[in-house]
Image 1 (cartoon, rainbow, N blue to C red):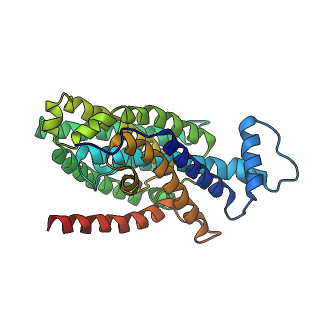
Image 2: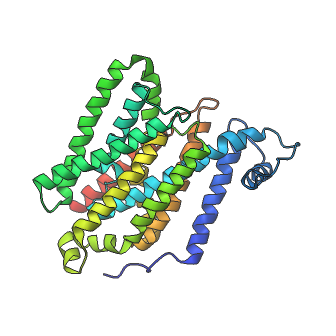
Length: 345
């Protein structure tokens, strides 16, 4: 089976990068207080270089201290969730799979909810407690899910992993409801966080997301050829020299770490990993050498636009970004379901 093209070409990188930058500057400039685009670019440029911002520019702190770190985190979370979704769809050969299929998102959410409910924090680093708890619970969730899957099925078949992941998600959801019941004074904070929000993001959050994406995203990109082999079935992939079990474990760990970091910073943002790879696949085709890099750009663009809608739809009030992505994702999920049913019948 010959896939379209072998890899991303330079002009394709340039086109995707240009679109992403255009959306990035738009999202930074537009908000409850809109700033002219040329002033926005000047503020961003001077902030990056550490230069003083000209005195004639209005409200520079809104861009430099509030909107710029938020949009950076939104773009990085979108790219991370999207490449995780593309990897999981290829690994599990399931068009309705995304990074949360493993149940790792639910585990990370449980860790963050525990940190918020019980006020777990580190002195001078108020958000570190949530980040550490979410990442730790993401790892723990992965160990539990893989351990149970291995106990039931030594071959670690995709159906077993999906089934255990769904059951584990239900289990963690029930535990979160119990915790929320006993954390009455923090119900509003937990509820808003579980709907997904990147308001109040900092440059430290952006650096953490960038490092995680560079490491875990690099691991996923390095296994594009193996993901292509999974398209013809695990047994066939094994016959052509792919170490199926090792590749599964490596990709699952990379996806889990990346999702854990994203959830700890932005809360539960659903459907990005499901929606974006499908939209990108219509442009690039199924070849993961093209799909995975395009998913990085596509996820960043999609989530930045969703965040802009969340900020502007009920201006000056802000919707949680997870509400917007879930609404769009639900519509696309239904479309995919009916198309799949039509092909089967």
